[in-house]
Image (cartoon, rainbow, N blue to C red):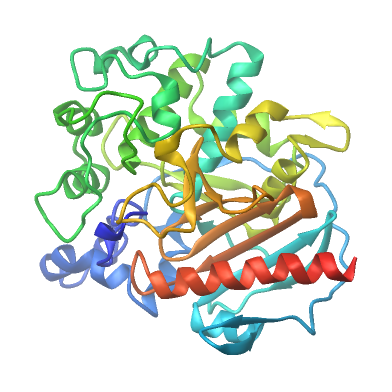
Length: 405
């Protein structure tokens, strides 16, 4: 999420989307990310990943969990930049494609302003995938497939022995504190991020890219936002459970939250094909609202414990100065901290949010029993102004809902 990804960056998510269209292949290949990630094409790309890359399904629940609906929030407004604005203003200004609000388990708002968006659409969630991966890690720990967050990465991913990840723990990965250098700068075609993307979309070896990264800090003490840390975390999960991410996500999460739609991970083009634990999950807005409800309810739904309550609690923030709100460095907005593959928020409420580039949010406020899902199609991977307006609007929405009781 760092500001270094300000270009159309994040090509790892739709690396070969336009290349699959055929005509003018050479020019399209050189400019595929710019095209696929720019408006209005990105609205199509972000809802059609399954048509352009290999995928693995995460099958829906046998019996979907009903979401009761009581439409509301018609009188809601928020203030930003000295102006009073409505949700319609927010959607226009921040290119919302899908939007849902759950309060006390009731769907009080649902709309799909995007051209290709609908209740049935599966949205590319980018780095919201990281938060889902974290939930799966918590489940694996509780059931004993994963021993401890203190376990060394190479215990589960022996192919990383001798690399900069040798000596890094699962805990380090969860907090983006591996000490391994990875710069998410797509503007530089020689950056580690660009090499990672080329391996995803062009058939190269992700393992080779990861093994080539140097260590720049001791593990555990320095925050560096890194999709590779999350990728390794996904490999740890697969190594610990013996299952691909898609099957584990179905059996331990998707089937238990009552998901109404199949989700999916897109896969690398090269074999062995692999899902991206840091950025290839696609799901419907309603099902992501169910994920948020699970986290808002302390890891339980309908009396069933799915994610350990302690895991939810640590996702709201941990006692580590380098992860505190405002302490992540100048590349990140001051209203965020980080913990457990989630972004933490200022204030005593300890709300938290998953975030994906181009404006994807899963906002969770357990104290208010409120969840907001917002998918978007920003023209750039990062946008300080649109992020600030979104945070202002969703913070005001929590206050509004609580005031109404």
